[in-house]
Length: 141
Image 1 (cartoon, rainbow, N blue to C red):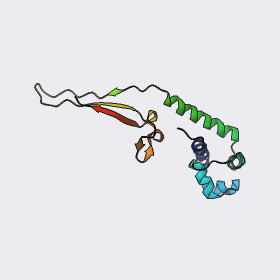
Image 2 (cartoon, rainbow, N blue to C red; image 1 turned 45 degrees about the vertical axis):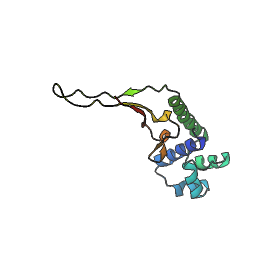
Image 3 (tube, rainbow, N blue to C red; image 1 turned 90 degrees about the vertical axis):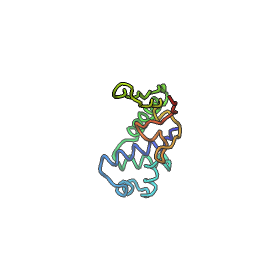
Image 4 (cartoon, rainbow, N blue to C red; image 1 turned 30 degrees about the vertical axis):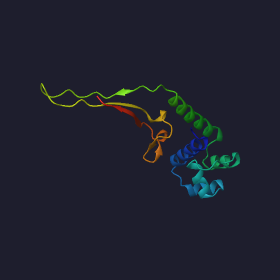
């Protein structure tokens, strides 16, 4: 499940980083505490519409632009979530020389991590690790 507050925080952080501004600078300009702004950017706190408007004003970006970016990010995540999961089959290399005693490799089936809900990858949900894959199962040859 995608949390809207996390997407809002990601967009706000992208704008702040693009402007090479610190949390302290933006929090001061928006008149919100540095800790609260940090929590909003990390998706741990949900800003009210008034605070969100103040943060956007401090970043000199319109609230409508921020919400459009959030909408585009959400649309991209939803599109990936409904993509059919197609297994990828690992192919064993050809043995060198005739009569080689090389054992057959197991078949490994993977699927995009975005299709796996809450599978842990490095302590983070797999859906938050772009481009990662999760091993679904291994079938012995």
